[in-house]
Image (spheres, one colour):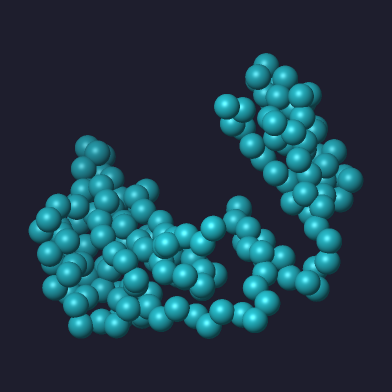
Length: 170
């Protein structure tokens, strides 16, 4: 299924989030959204960016043509959103990229995995998955992390291109 929009929110303020959001925009052929916090949390658990700073940080995205949808998460209030709307209202939205004639699979993890025809067959190791290996599940349930890691390393030694980690057995 094709997602209506793909994006990121929370965890960071706009200033810290831009490089990650830009990578997402560069990879995604559909609409993107970003809802940053009003900066990073301070020592008291609050957020220090006032509406002017928050909106200025997101204006940097808008002037670079990166926004389809934008909002605020932790530490933002209606005053932040109003300042943001006022600041970006003259900016054009992000243009959707042209779709490739033959799209390829794109996976996410610590690094993007873009599976092109030139890469050929990709072996996915599924033994690092609670649903794919009873042995791995028993080791994880017993908190035997070093032994569980051996299962992962064995897949790498057998030349797995991708490891499928899943720690949810429900």
